[in-house]
Image (cartoon, rainbow, N blue to C red; front, top):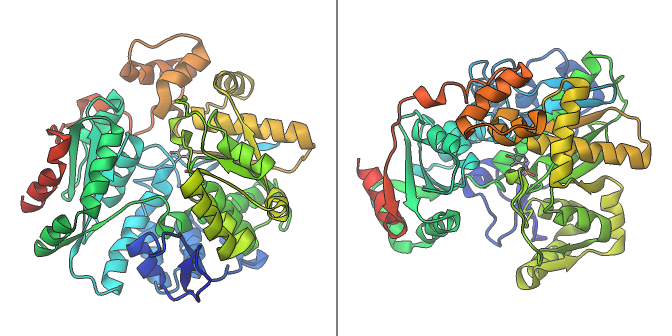
Length: 494
Ligand SMILES: *Cc1c(COP(=O)(O)O)cnc(C)c1O
């Protein structure tokens, strides 16, 4: 299996190892496989009795053909171990007759980014060997909180890689700060900067683009790499849990082999829901895909009108991981629906005007598979409250956006097939807002909201967030934003 850019009509030439190491294609496009491998119903049936790591290695081996099955299985067993994902990697939990919650947050940071970031660093580590790279990869991340922590947990102690995370000193929550400051691992570093998230992100961009820095790194035996969410190494592992969910629907008798099911995905960058689409193209019997957005409803508008227009107000919501105006992975769907030439033209228009409109037949083809719904702040809180009171199911803010969207889809279409709703974060990750929605009271502080939520709902605080205040703080460095490059170099010398 070889890979090509979404914006090029040239033949595919890149191996999986190369695309995982490189991230973005030379022309600025995203890497896509030259064809979609098939997954037969017999293969799916055989996976029903297998563990998550076996399901993952089986699906990944169809895409990463320059990795052996044994390599992939070894990596999947480590990534999705019982110690990292207590109780299993992607359990399907019943909400009511029609809705099932696919809980993707049982990993080490209690959010769904772990599903990809626990395996991707291992794939990168092997990619370095496979491409003859002798230098150590230095991953630089600017974070507003959650991605940084998930990356730290993913890359910690992975051979051939070091990681450094910058965050705005006053721009992350107390819980997020504690999570990063207490990070374990011998190849990790965390540094706060005096500035906001944009300063941190710009700082990292400048360092990435600085030839002199690259030279200095090279002399020390390093090169820069990124943990970007458009990397194929992050996308491919997300296909797995849709297959796994179907296996679980078969095992519980909710579906018979060949019956289709729908999915509803709380969407930001369009990575998670695009993985569902790929699973469907492989042969998984997915019916309809519901794309759920919060008040930043650019995707809802796109799926309804065919126009993607980022010239609009940006809102901060209680589902911050979906506060996004550029859904990068949508480019992959455009490629599969409209081809490389049109995709390149749409992306050019997006860059120049912030806007593009797809042809009617392309919109029709997309709408045959996808519908967009959005949930405002009041309905998000109400859904958390009502879902807990009616079914005893405690949803986080992102999951609640999706539950509400799924309800709207079912009400509008009358579609009665089983609906798998991606649950992308533990309710404890957003304990303040979840506690307020459930109890209609405010907790005294963010840390206290964890205990208050646990007492109120009689549920347990997940291990990544329990006992946070008593862990050993390892990283306390704060620097000015113009000292970031120097801080990187000092870290490499230590
Ligand atoms: C990243 C994230 C999302 C959005 O996923 P995309 O793949 O970017 O669409 C949704 N919920 C949570 C909690 C996330 O961290």
